[in-house]
Image (tube, rainbow, N blue to C red):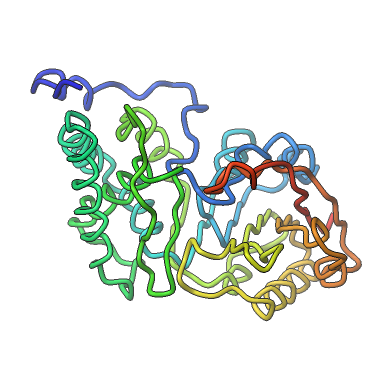
Length: 321
């Protein structure tokens, strides 16, 4: 893989943003991301979204943001609130929003350094940057802004594009622990796509916040989509590892209480989660969201180290309309 010349790099960075809004889509491959489920989720959006009466969008567990991009691309959303407790994710999104060109420059450097290397040197380079990533302060307040964050954000993208299976996973200490992948030509930089995402992010308030704070921003013109860390559907599975904070059954109940309060306030809502009945007769969510509409949809679990463990499973969608 040849390194770009100075003129080629300049032309890449200076490429104009394409007008097609469809360019804006998730930047990261995210465990539990909803891109593959969008056709089924889209069918279940509130009718008020289609009528244009819901103009504020809130997503308190934004993750990869697939539903955010789909809704903002499809409907007349005036403002959005995107929250998550993962500081690295919020830092990345803030950099894309506020200084996308600096991120493009940093990713170009990483791409030009990584791609020409042979497999062994790529592996060494990957683990060098993974180790650097894990030295970052995990207690950082991501609600401010630092110009140096562009380098930190670029490493997040780089690791996501070059790690095994594109799986973002951290341990209890908040350390990224996914091994290197074996992609021949990973696309570390897509400048036009990042610019399109930055354009959509201009309507968004991006904050590191707990989900319980969403009601401060919601009213009758709001649509909320919740995609929390999934409840494990077996003793060996773990859908919570995108962040070091544990999201246990008590947290699921706390989220249900918020869902009830928002419903009482007249806010239209949708929530996703795993379906415990895939393997056992566990009606946890059926009981938890009794009185609301619960539907089951099929998802293909792609992110798993064992190919034999991949396949169709049911997930649930809860709505209050």
